[in-house]
Length: 494
Image (cartoon, rainbow, N blue to C red; front, top):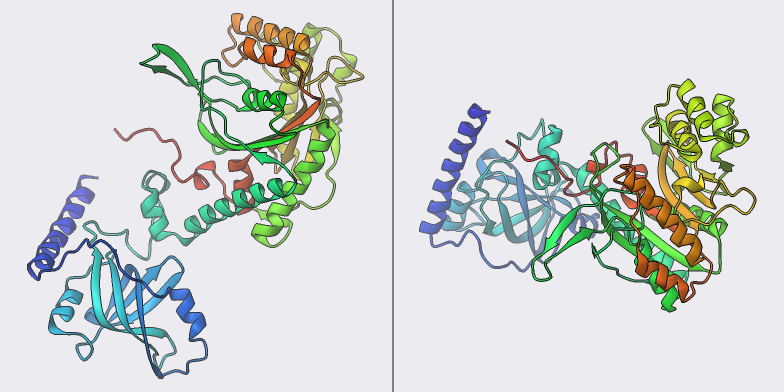
């Protein structure tokens, strides 16, 4: 590491000398702007019919980053947001001072070029430079061209370098933007109103998760970073702002990191009045398939070695049925908590002694079934015990009208028939508080004001959450959540 730093310092010293030389020529190497008239891809398209060896009289101004310098500066590969354009630098077209500037360029510099368009005898669209303008002198060298930036830690810590060097990384984050834009458009076209709710909460709620806590100095009080927007969004439903609401939101959960978990993440959360969770199943299918069609051009995706079709109606199976198919154990035939824990432990699934029937069922599902659900499926009838915001199932009070959608073995969506009975909700919160007293830091707090809101009347509703980071991973064939978040959470270097 010390050798690398010494080498980097030597390169930086040489570039600082060139920076000083530019200033001695009266050149500001960090000017305020540049009037660009064309991009690389546009020039390729505009001059597609230009024959090899032909020169136009068309003057253009292009700008970008120097990625290659060949023949002592005679040819420069300039990369902009759209692609690459070749620049020809010859003393027949450049003044002596301008030619001197070329000698002071390094890989990584950002420059502007004014000149005329031609196609070389070898067939490459090229700008014959008549003027070179340094727009940002790079003081540190880029990673070596042919090996690129392969170290994952460096890629994630210095995302700017990753984006400079890796077109795949740039395209992944561009697709993320298009996925979110498509999601927003599809919902607004269906009559959903986009809203914003607070990120700082007095009471953390809306999800079973451990929150981050901070302190507000002026109010001298603790505040929590949002774990979910659910309770605020449903307050808006109570208020009648709209019968269809959604928020594309940032959430923060004080949990571990993994290839599918980042403490700061993005999700879609929406609510629709006068429907139940079955309507959310249909909406999930439409949203994900339409997003894939719009962003990727089709609904059949490849993830690793797997081909997954997203179109059509997805299967719906209960959690208990899936567990029984895999293990032979029918949890619906088990009544006692202790018997459910014993059944889970026979399958080598560890549980605390306080775990009830529902937690035992969910733990077995997570250990034995979840990772096998490759094709899209809605897993229904979650235990009521682990679903404190979902209505009880109409036929079995041990269960809830809740589903999670799995694709590629991952949970990508979670939805309920929402509780609108304030007495039921109060009792669910109280049960969660008892879990907290037993040591469960992720159990939900009692939000008395939310219960008060329900006492004014909330229409029956379906609610849906989709994890945008995981959806982007799926649609971009990305192996880690860090690949789809521009700046993932990292442990500081020591």
